Amino acid sequence: MVKAVISADIIGYTSLDDINKEKVDRSLINVLGMITDNYNVYGRIIKGDYLECVIPNPAESIRIALIIKCCIKSTRITVQKHGSSIDMIRMKLFKTYGIRIAIGLGDLQRYEPERGIIDGDAIYLSGRIINEHKTHNKEKISIKRTLFFQSSEDRLNEEIDPFLALIDFQLSRATAKQCEVLYFKLMGYNEKIISEKLKIKQSTVNQHSTSAGWNAIDLAVKRLENTIKQRVCGN
Image (tube, rainbow, N blue to C red; front, side, top):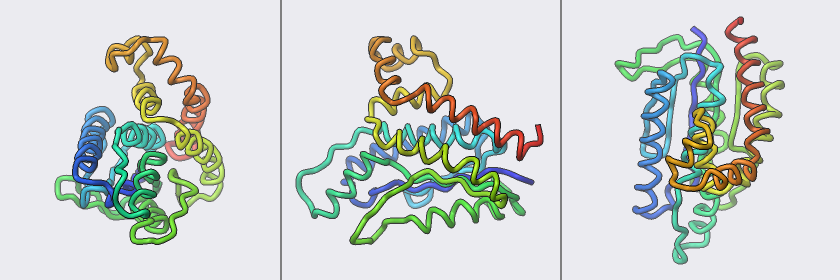
């Protein structure tokens, strides 16, 4: 059975202090609960900073990945003024990127959520990408991408990759407040409801949305959803 699997790890997690780790942990738990309820996703958190999700409808994988990304990036951590220079760099990288996410598309030879078993090409593809781009215990840290897609079909990868690269770049420039608005936009809420949820003016919601490039992101996500639906789901 063809499914999408997300593998993801928090950037700079080990360099956060306990208070900031708690904030990130809560964000990860909250977003996992939300996508489980709304998209019938099976997900699990491993060792505090690593996430795995099985997405039954592959066409929804891009949106879900961005929901996770925006939720984690909207977490407001405090960068400490003490500690090693490498820790300071990693904390700033978290504020810029938040989380690294890879989507793998393929068969799952064994999928038994009640027993916590996920085994097959999809999770192998996503997990391999995350392992290749890990920055744990590295002296020099260079992050060029944090959103990845991989399937066994080269043409599909080539169609999706440029869009993901552009979205990735746009989100790296977005503030925590802008990502919070994008999170709700990706969930399908209108600006009036978002303003009520965040207790800010609707004009402020619109300003954050515009500054974060929502219109372009929305168009790209819809295009990618349609591409995956047509090529993978056969509709």
